[in-house]
Length: 222
Image (cartoon, rainbow, N blue to C red; front, side, top):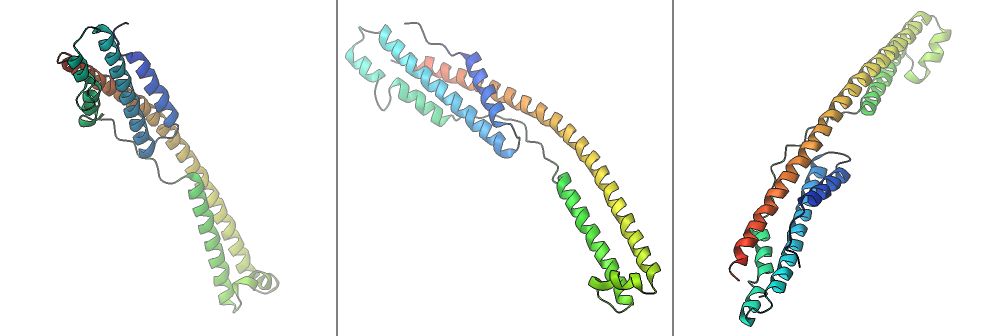
């Protein structure tokens, strides 16, 4: 039986695949989920390694005294139990970069807000004209078209049209602004994801190497 070794390339590939799968959309939750997933990958790798080391030790010590074998496989302080305790007492950690903030208002939200404001302004303007001539907002337009103050209603309609044009202009400008924000954000998040995976991978390798060093030390005691 060959002496067990850790395949860091395979672990790195697992981490990259898992993180890319989780980080389709990046926020504090998916970043936290990525850390938890990497922690699980690392702990499973150490558990498998300790199991293989245990098998390797038993295979290479067939003539060891029974008391020595009992000590090695003890359910409270045997080799594999000590490795498990080490993982519990020294949990995996990684100082990964803070998740960048998103812009909070989408184009759709902004456009809906503008439309609502335009409607409110138009209704308010029509109601004001109706109040001047002693009629309600719901019948103002029909009454004024056939009455003397037709100039006033035309002015109001022109004002509404101008308001509509202004709203559309603002929406176009906002769309361009948000498109630019999205592009910048996509680049920022792409860079963040890459950095995050690198940090988690490096931290994982360092952590596993520490566990291997601990394994080597306690093996000498059996």
